[in-house]
Image (tube, rainbow over all chains, first blue to last red):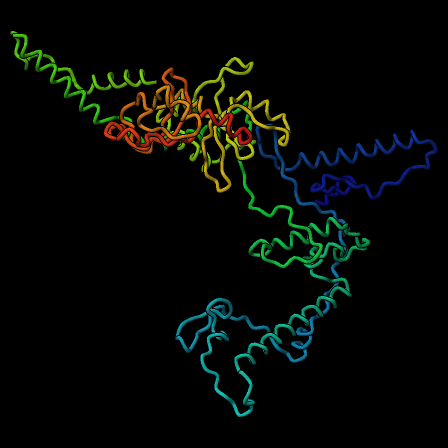
Length: 329
Length: 187
């Protein structure tokens, strides 16, 4: 806010105050007096800023009243120079001359032959060259020429011509100094658009690094590209792997503990059917019941067997089993 | 030196499980009283140059101070990974396995030497054998005085062993203590 308070301009967005009408009363000789006057005047300016701050509507916060500052009003000079106007590409010039308008094209085009909507370009496209089964012969055709090969070579020529034009446009832009910034950054030797910095000398290591990065940024990681003579092997040619930390805290970390416990439990669960030996349990039960029957036949007990408390056979089995395991350890 | 990743840990545990069964829990979670710390730490597995070591935590922490090229071994070497990524138990794991073995086989004194020379165990040399061994289970071989001699795979189950003729194979040897003399360079 360019508030005028007592002749000062206050810019609250930048928390600044300017006193444009100040005049030093007299030329002061010694530095101390000059300093004193500057400080006294400065305090007046700061007081003006503080007054304006406290006049703003404030909201209550845990640490005290909070004020949101208005946007700054002081205009600063431009940080970077204006971008240079790009030179028109050869197609742009031609289009202007002929009055050609740029029309937006659809991604899907209706294909008459298959009666379906196909892409304009890319996989399974509308007028794919490879899909032509028959090319009818024209009167202008020579007898020995292969029309399919002719179409292919014509397409290659068109692509090459386009590439040449693209490079020509880039060179024209570079001459003026208006290269698009992504191309500018890609060539590390060139300075950023507009700056006057001298082109930095790129060291051999840096160039090799960049060449290596570019080489591995193909779809197969640069594995099948032919290497030129003198090109160093890639710095890291294998897949990147990440391992658990060797020592976390003191010895085993929680992640490692979790992993080993998980695997241990999985393994135990998979083989849990072997923990309880059914055959052995059955044998033991049979032996026990045989012994009991023999004892009952021998003694003549008054109480009938039905009233006797029957101990659960499985309870005995487990204790018996664990004791035998303890012995075999 | 690095900890094992998941697939490697599964392989190691499965191999150990063949010999120890549920005692694998004891191996993985046993407290170790090594080191000056009061609270006992645990034992962990570390991989160094394709060999798996069973080390206590305090030792691992101190071993990180040694340069990787200069570190030869630490703790107990229990096995190694082959070039194609398979895990084999070596003889140095014998102590660990013998303490936690599920299936054991005792050899007669006459056939001890044969086993230590690297031959498999035939039925004639068998002294005692624990029951309910299935075929192709892991088995630890002891002498009659309960000294562990090595380990191997049971060729037949206990029932089949009783019916076999005296020259049949009982245990296919995987490692024996004679290897300490025979293949000193490998260890």
